[in-house]
Length: 271
Length: 268
Ligand SMILES: Nc1ncnc2c1ncn2[C@@H]1O[C@H](COP(=O)(O)OP(=O)(O)OP(=O)(O)O)[C@@H](O)[C@H]1O
Ligand SMILES: [Mg+2]
Image 1: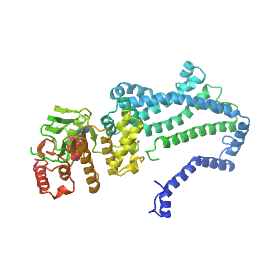
Image 2 (image 1 turned 120 degrees about the vertical axis):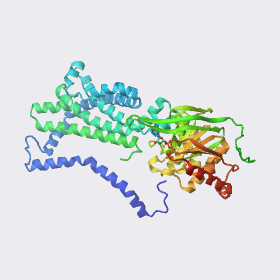
Image 3 (image 1 turned 180 degrees about the vertical axis):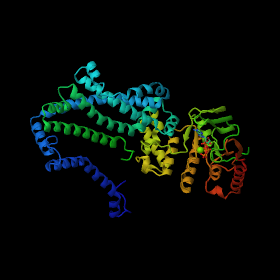
Image 4 (image 1 turned 90 degrees about the horizontal axis):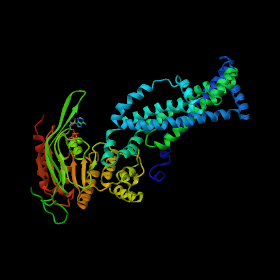
């Protein structure tokens, strides 16, 4: 349909398309805007506004990073962290979404089980890490579990909130169209809650990287968190910063990836 | 009841046709627990709709029209009274407010009832295209609802209610958001569909004009708590020409009659 508009002049079409084009340019820039922070840091360090012993300039960190990339030292750590986050995230997100949908649609279940989740939610995930290490050992399993717990609650509450906000009319439409309970779940509740689910996925991705860093400090022999901790112990500040930047970038890129999925799977909502 | 007899159309309904919908002494109230308040929405509602009949309900805003229709559709529980629907398929409903699903395209919205039943994609497509054609939405088949006008969304709802061809059609001000021109076209289409398929239709409108254009009978409701205060036969022969019938004096006499009834309803 788009290209057949004989009644519009080329200038009109230009004007019509301009906002969308501007938006996509902004989006490209927005991917790189965190780099501005690095630039500011570099300049402050060069101008000796901040203590170089604690905040080596990004250029120095980049040098260290380059050495580590060449020696492939970092990649094992990145791989270990990604594996733990990936598995733990899925272990938490899938039950979180399903239970959120279930409790959102069923008032009796919500009344009975809701308070249990509400009571468990405020328990600090890091505080129970020693317990989890005790139960699941210092291997990957304990990391999966601690991330899964953190992700679960974010997904559960965001999904529940999304389902609770479904306009009654959509449920009426489903009922009148003859939807079974499962179809209402799958065809109405899930898509209505999808925007909230994506908000949850982004929040959960951010906290997964926060949790994994802490978990790897305490009980791991690999991973970016372990790498940061080990660098700190030998007072290798540049290496430590490489670790910090790497884990931040991993979180950031994950969120960007989820946003791309959101644009693909929630095409009806405005971004 | 003086039904006009036409030679051309399928209608009117034979005077002895079986009742498709029977409502006896229906009462509906809402209770608001937080304010401890009871709202009586409808009291002692009585009417019968014969199989294949087209009945319009008119009445002032808030008198309980939507409530009665929702009870017929099984979306709301009655407080007391009797409601009987004699049909092999459940009634299809066109809702008063925007009811298209925002995450589905126009075509998917129309196909929704079929897709729930696992009708083959090919069959769905054929049927959906027919209805998009009928409602003038073919060009927007793959658009999302947020890209449509209010009237177009309403047309999607109408198309969806027709897609799986149920016997009873409950329509709650389906053409309310449309301009005069489109409304006339859709009224004509609806009458065409009804005449071809023999559906039983209950149609709510706040337009006396629309009621007389479409209905075999017009039920007039009193202000809240609503009850049926008049049951008027509309004598025009079928098939009707929605433009031509406005030259008929009886049209304006009936318009006057309904207006008088609406104005005479005691206020509460
Ligand atoms: N879910 C509900 N909870 C409480 N009160 C309700 C509910 N639905 C309807 N009512 C009340 O019942 C009465 C009748 O409402 P209804 O929607 O049936 O009116 P209506 O005749 O369709 O009006 P309109 O022409 O404006 O659409 C109103 O007073 C309304 O406030
Ligand atoms: Mg209404």
